[in-house]
Image 1 (tube, rainbow, N blue to C red):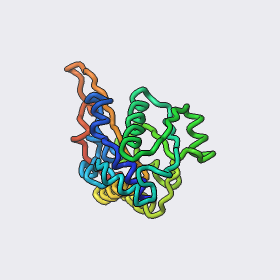
Image 2 (cartoon, rainbow, N blue to C red; image 1 turned 120 degrees about the horizontal axis):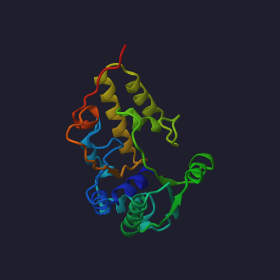
Image 3 (cartoon, rainbow, N blue to C red; image 1 turned 90 degrees about the horizontal axis):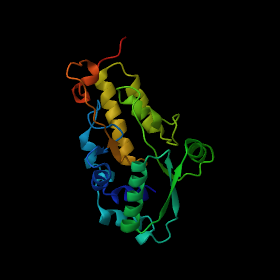
Amino acid sequence: DKNVRIALCKAIDKSTLVSQIYQGFAHPAVGILPKGFPNYNEELGNLDPNVYDPEAAKKLLADAGFADGVGFPKLEMYIRQPTQQQVAVCEGIQAYWKENLGIEVELRPSDFQSFTAAAFTDKTAAMYYVGYSQDYVDPATFLNVFRSTGRHPHKDETWDELYNTANASFDPEVRFKGMAEAEKLLVESAAWYFVAQPFSIALWPCNVAGPTLVPTMTLTPTPRPT
């Protein structure tokens, strides 16, 4: 029920949660692409699932037949190979859902094998929290996993067609525009809720130079070779 999904999103004060746990070393996520990454779109933060509104969340849950959380099933949230901070984030989410919606979710930190079995083989994981890191500097490094043939149980042929068409284009403007729309649809679906994007700080000798030290914000997409 999309009302339930959006209610779960809108009940979480993401900015406060990320600020308190990461102490300035993470950005609240508005989509799957991190701040500073090519094709990052700050405007996604204005989409309904990303707007913290406990009263609206309560109404959505009531509209779905679970006023004040009454009758809502108790679910488990798997946490794949969690760090201490990821567990703290999930504890915060758990508390927001209890306080704002009256629902209970049990946290289940899991090793990779247990998580994979529950999520993809047995399909007993109703929800889960996972972390990602980039393999290469392109939106596809994050968006690829949401294809119907990818690693997650995300079945949406309309989304697949949009994303695959964009990813196959040799025109960088067409490609990045299509990928931006695909990311927007992910957020609007509320099937996925993007929470935190941590970053690290490093010191470099003053005589070091090269692409590694160029801020990603300055990078622009380049056309693929034909």
